[in-house]
Image (cartoon, rainbow over all chains, first blue to last red; front, side, top):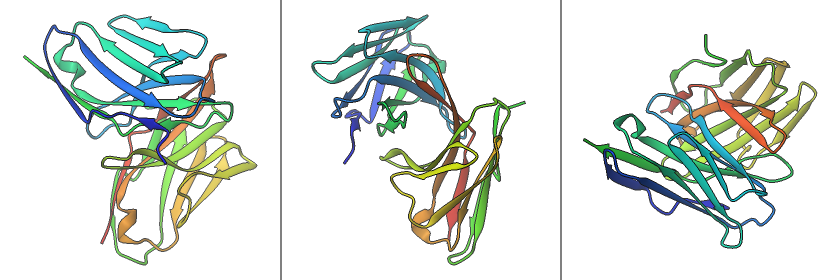
Length: 111
Length: 114
């Protein structure tokens, strides 16, 4: 049973606009959440994370929002750039530190 | 130089063969992991090791075994490969940031079992 779900397999956005990626989780014991970015033929690379004690974390063009009551997090990319075209994975962990991953969302940024 | 390396990067093998995938890291992390990625399923944990003497099964360990030869090396073996083990395999290492654990991934091994 998948504990982390990314219900949108793909997202297409115009360059310069905002990309919003969504992620839902079912395990209330998760307390640390991460986003990874993956290019073809490469491993996932860490993008940004958020602890459950926060509801927002920003790093440059990337912002992650956490809504614990809804068990939902989102990643905002503003402005979107062609180099942002990749697969984005949402992941979550609890006290055992093992990560549970979503299935990924493929983002395509159109020029 | 990459912090987490995997060899081979690509491998084609036949059903019933034994193969080993190797992972090395220069990050100095104690924790290492093996995942497989299948289309539409994200990454699933096969085995993990919190130190050289501590090895644990993940959610899909059947058909796989691992060896932690040193802090920096963690290998994954398929004793008798079968076609549904065709997948992309990733090794990862992790450190603890104070608020949570971040994992760092190798470039992956693409395995095809015929």
